Amino acid sequence: MSTHDPSSEPVALSPERERGRRRSMLVAAFGTVVEWYDFSIYFYVATILTAQFFGDQADSLLLTLGVGAAGFLFRPLGAMVFGHLGDRVGRKQALVVSAVLMAISMLGIALMPTYETIGIWAGVGMVFFRCLSGFSVGAEYTGIMVFLMESAKPGKRGAAASWAAANSEVGALLAVGSGALLANTLSDEAMNSWGWRLLFVLGAVLAALMVPLRRMMEETDTFKRLQQAEQKKDPALQRSPLIIAFLEQPRAILVAFLISSIGSVSYFLNITYVPTYIEEVAKVPNSGTLALGTVAAVVAIVVTPFFGLASDRFGRKVSLAALMVVFVFTTIPAYVLLSNTSAAVAVAGCAFLAIPAAGWSAVAAAMVPEQFTGTSRFSGMAIGYNVATVLFGGLSPLIATALMSSTGITLAPAIYATVIVVVAGVPTLFLARSMGSKTLAECDRDEHLVPA
Image (cartoon, rainbow, N blue to C red):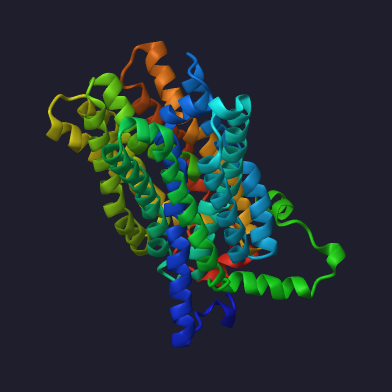
């Protein structure tokens, strides 16, 4: 028989503190808009950047895309550094520094002289700023999820965290919309000469605005408790939160990796890869594929919060199990619909792909940070999530295209995604702990690390 722990009871906040909590959560959730704008805008203007920074060679576009992918490789490194800061210095401070670095990286690209002006150093500068961008966003999504999970009320963590997941799509749409607006407003010469720079200036301004906003955020109760506990310890006995995560919570890191692997594959193949797939397989013009991609993004934005609510109501594991079934039985048929010549049928295929992908991201947004205790939540989640994003996010479109090319099977991306869902999803259901109904204090305690 367990004893009652008063610390596990939710504490009623004063009206002023409640307003501060809500404001902090809104500011945190908005951060994913900036992160995904930064990621998306680079690839949206990749052909322009190729001519401006890498010369007009046959393989220059591949080099530009490779530099973009290099940013992904720096995410785990940023995750380790910012994860340590987030667990040791504070969730808020890590997010402030991250916003500063994002602003610097986008402004640096906007101001960088071209290949014609400084030769090869233009490409070197681009590599530096994209790697800096990748390093900085190693803190963003994971840090925001941690902050929202620790700031939300008991029983509402799924709904709160799902808003940040939805905002990532808003950032991608903002990138596409602003790029399309400039492309249709300016002449081709103006767009290629200086118009593209405005897109990165906009991103830098958005990131810079996040700095004062994030300074006004209130630190989470979990970190405040950790600070008080650390002050009582002998400094010589204090260990790095990253080391604590690896030594004491390896199962949580594994679960974070497995859940995030499915989230990355489903997001990048079922939403962002859709325009490329339709263009390659159905030979639909680029304008039509972007329209279908926009449909997928809008559907994801609309349905994501509802899946967050459902995970609060029915439980995280039940929600993930239901989504796995949907993935397995609809992914391949949905890809068949994508290649249909009927626009209405193709739109239906986009929706069938986007809905479970958005649902998984919504449930994972709260479930992944709930796997960890407060001591190393930021560090552990950052590693599990970002390694999965590198392996199954940035590389998934490349793997899907290679599989189609080598096998001649146009449904290879759907088959690949389905296999990853099963291979990573089944052990997740056995290893993960379901803490949606627990209070934050209960999530933070070590004795709750046993899967439920």
